[in-house]
Image: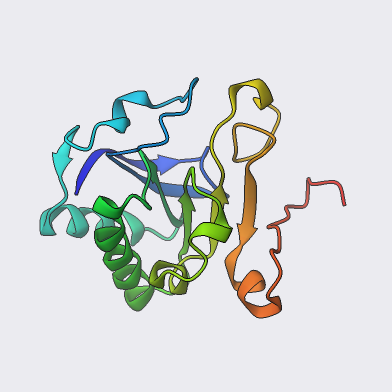
Length: 168
């Protein structure tokens, strides 16, 4: 798996200060995507043991809330195995850190994958330029959902992640 970049202090892709890993490779190729360079599976650098070591070191800071993996698309078959292992390692070492995944695929199409054992929140759905709304928290278009994975697995129904600023 290749990755485009790692942001060690990101406040745009989930709550709190987070570490964000931008993986390479995406077949959705959404018009208006904010990161089209990550569509190419060969873009960036190879993810190595050194990379996971750097991620773990960045996540070890007390002010870091967790890890966000986006891209590209973490759920592309070429990325899924490595992304699953990253999340498993992180949850094994520090289960207090939350893990968010952004994907252009919808939950109904990947709800049974192993990765979800280690993920707290998934932002799903393609970015749709005609539904773009810059006032939305942690997502780019109105069709995208912020899904609380543990609550969803518990109830069997899709449960949305809700912030204090959301209107109920």
